[in-house]
Image 1 (tube, rainbow, N blue to C red):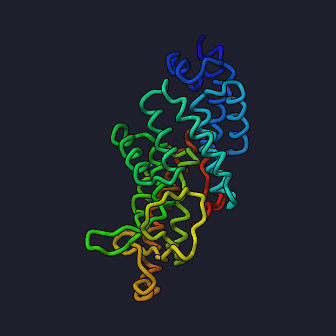
Image 2 (cartoon, rainbow, N blue to C red):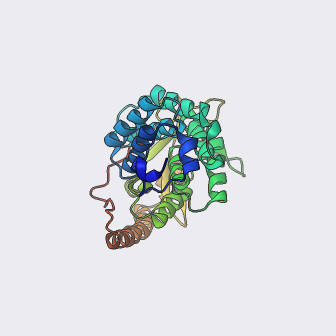
Image 3 (spheres, rainbow, N blue to C red):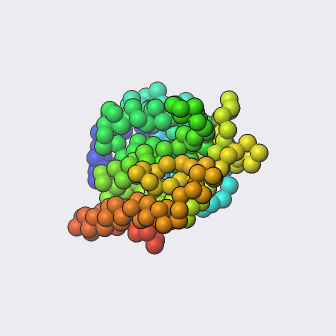
Length: 294
């Protein structure tokens, strides 16, 4: 059956890809619509389309995977408690039915499943491997950046000092790369503005002390198990404990925040200009849905 008959001609999926995803033409139509809506940050509409795809084919792995992603980004946007069990169920179902997928799609399903379980280190390795295989994989870039923003753990550095494992420099690079690759990809901005705000406002974050435990992205930390660190832009973004943070004068912190912001402003202006020539719409800073601070 051709893509034209499915109403998917503009998306140009191969027939082999269609068969790997689902044998139900209506489910495929709803799936591709849902993915496009997710990319455009129309999260409720994306959820509706993806749920309809799953209702038509309950073994549709990529529909379950993208619904899990959609529910995750709804939580990011709404600053409300996530339905973690439902995200987990759809992610696990996607993993269970991933046997017919391409190696790339299967790796994406696995990487997000690890992320939502709280296995940040192995999820990070999987997203990194996807990018090493294809440096233009925008979904891998945006999720690697999101993982770096969310990682809650403290680790020992090479000198034996305790420091957050979250790498905000890598997060900025990941979101920047995503926007450069696909200027009209609304989801690609990820937590870029959240990082800017955290550095500019000097907001601290509680990180979990090392222990053998998995913590999902939406799970709340217990205050008695965390230590606070502050992100500061010096030569690069560094995490400082409260005492070290107080030793950096406010003008230095402000200057660093401005240096961090300037490339982002240039990036957004360039993305907006490129998207307008293609008839696309790019979220501007004033309209971009605010993400959940952690």
